Amino acid sequence: MIQPPNTTSGHAPSPVSDLSKFECLGCGTCCRQDGYVRLKPDEADKIAAFLDMDVYEFIEAYTILTQDRQALSLIDKKDGECIFLDNGGCRIHPAKPGQCLGFPHQWKFKAFEAVCAWAIRTRKNHSPNISSPSSSSK
Ligand code: SF4
Image (cartoon, rainbow, N blue to C red; front, side, top):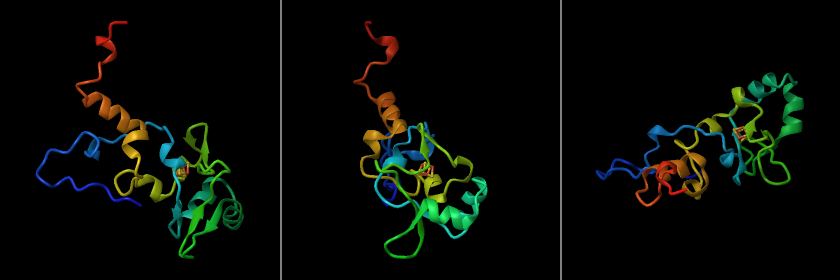
């Protein structure tokens, strides 16, 4: 996981490095990244209860043991996106793991600024080189 940038250097943070105004636009990009979605010890129970499943059945159906054998992780679909990403939304949103809730404040991926819908919108809104729709000649 990549740590958030240090914004205490005395320089004004760039629009995208200032994550204080982050709001999830539901693009699902973070749910399509490589890597584990690690579950904390109580999270398998929480998600299983949300899905109205027995926790052992949930573990069998939806998790793998991480390579370091320290945690369970949600499995991916064949295309690499999280098993619970559905039509752009999280099927287990009310019970989603803490790792998901920690994005982008506790971790973010390398291409975050290029592909996260909020980051793209934020960059556009702060770029003097990009015309707003109201100023277009169309
Ligand atoms: S559990 Fe939900 S929020 Fe977390 S990666 Fe999967 S689809 Fe995304």
